[in-house]
Length: 218
Image (cartoon, rainbow, N blue to C red; front, side):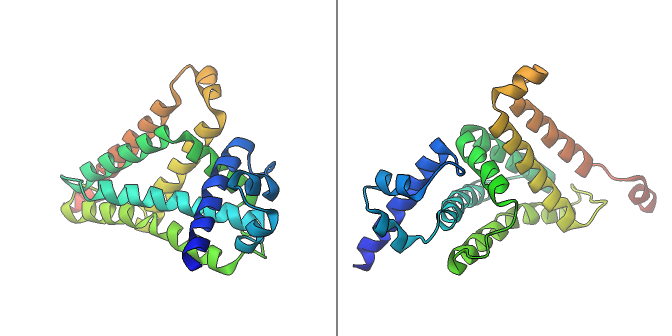
């Protein structure tokens, strides 16, 4: 019975992902997801008490896939820390480019919840989501630390501040592109993804340059 319940839960999450992407979080109702999953309204509520619980679980699953991809490319990185950082971010940007629906949903998810989970959010779902989000920054942190150790990366600011800034600005820019779509291309006459790659080059250029105080110490 437990296995059947687990399969049913996974199917609900899969179908909810499709409905959220098609209809948007604001317009989607639980009945639509139940119908898409081929189950009754009563059954879906046995697994998820609210649409918000389900949305968090969908986002957690997407972030798990994102983290698995990061681990995969991290294990194949070669060279100095700054070279690994550039390659790592380059491949993350390509991932975002190929999965614009994921980025669009992430942007809508952030807008819907405004960074604050609802008070009645299922505690297990909340803890699961938070754990996944925290893991998402770990590999980037390791790369920057490695670059500091081998001398290829030079920080003027706090390590955590630098890593969280890179990560969050990258996400925010990608989400804007995911939401605006071709609107940015029409507005600026530039391929939006090239803007993100330009941002990447600026990061690596700044992080690989010693500031004047460091040079004087040397």
